[in-house]
Image (cartoon, rainbow, N blue to C red; front, side, top):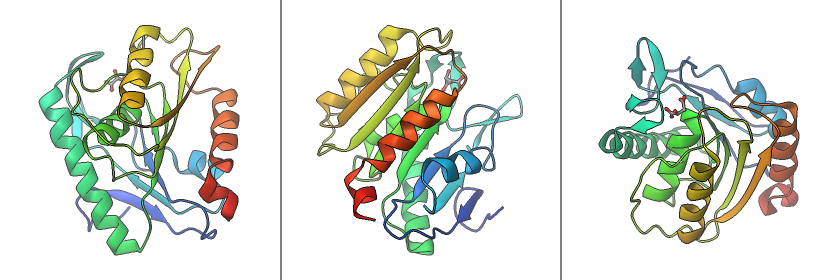
Length: 210
Ligand code: MLT
């Protein structure tokens, strides 16, 4: 665990200079350790940067406050997304890494989606597992064809299909290059999520150049 920067986090240096660093964003109740193994599976040799969400909900770390399940405190979303963006800047300088590809699950996917919409230059792209719309009225962002993979669960009890569809529309309107796949799964990750995300990352231009 490293605490020197503005977020408690883990950092694992990469061994493949051609692979984009991964920013690993855990779900509610997770921490900076949760997604390290997933990150290593999704992009072997990539540097891994894994912060812990700074909001506590009944002791469970999250990346922003919510008023109820699926009902977000959007002022807090905006503030926390910008704080995460500042942390990414600090970490890039401190560790000498490029703009990361976010790998977010659930609440972590939602803060990644907010960051894409609020600070388009912060991320090289994103894999969003079980993401929802983080901001009802996002600003007009300029995402310059930033690649985004959204993997939703057909029977997800937390994310209605209409909500993930709206997130796709928001990101496409902002200029992202969005791939949206709906899997026969619930809110939990499945093996199919891992395979699809790994193959999608391997197909990104930067990964091909490695
Ligand atoms: C959220 O609060 O970000 C979503 O409801 C997902 C969750 O963390 O359960």
